[in-house]
Length: 421
Image (cartoon, rainbow, N blue to C red; front, side, top):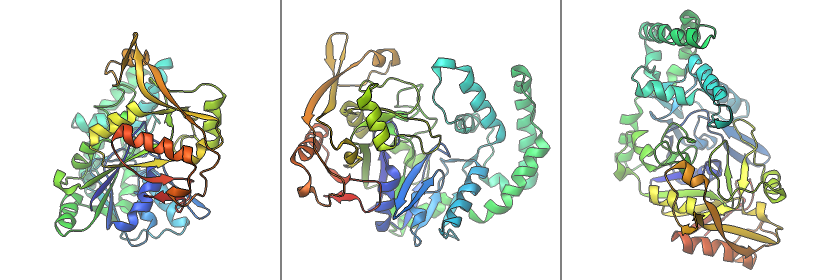
């Protein structure tokens, strides 16, 4: 079965672990959007791996991993990640393929990303300042530089010269140092030497393995509520983490996807600004943050924490046609006297069950809660029947509300700490 693992909240749901678990049943793992702004954490035994660009499936030595055309790639970050993995004993060899159509993050993308974010003051988007947004801007403005340009240094040099000439006009406007096109070319020409062996026409490759009945696992980055079209705009990412991105970001047809797994935490988190109706700004929220290690894998920033918002998850499930749910971090809620779930919003005196598109309206929404009795311990529980009754009531209510089965329940950070139903 060809499966997609997708975030059902605002990202950071634990997709890396779920992909790692499901990789054993796949032949190919493909990442289809985002860039080094992603941070997928996988814990195996006593080793923790944080992956930003390379698919989580790389930790399985017999699997092929593909970075699709929808991903934007910072070659410096990619090579650092590759060397780190190799230093930890992960043999990459010929198991990694990079789409020749993927776009390159350039030094000026990162500079202007940081400059733009700083200029927004209290209205910051919450970008990781890794140049992802500006790279996608250039892609859609049709002036981007792609991985395939690394294969022809004459073409690469000309494109860098052209782009830097335009970029330097903006540098003059903003009063920042100009970029040197020669230095950038020399830097990227060196990257080309190391990256070239991995470059492939992955559109043809993926369609070939699909026709040959190989099993493909799609790995999304970020979360559904950060989708550029369907998320809480403008506090979103610059790509499509939802199901449509899996096709435009790989070149595979919609028929290639047979199963969609949404990943959600047993509570809700968010990084950066934007409405968050169920946010907890008290000791309860801080306790969840500390116990759950809710600090960004990419930036280290503390995440905003709150009760599970089922309006958000139901919306995400609708967008991507989720067939099943993987719930993570249920153990973080262990020991609480009571646990709440947001089942709707109150907006201007009436109850609504949807997310308003107008951000100012969403910011005024107040959560409507259902309260559950807490439980003592789910950590290290190996079967669903052994979970505390109150935890099972919590899970089964969520299933009924969403109309989707919860088939995996993560009870800890390690690979083997998971209940499969």
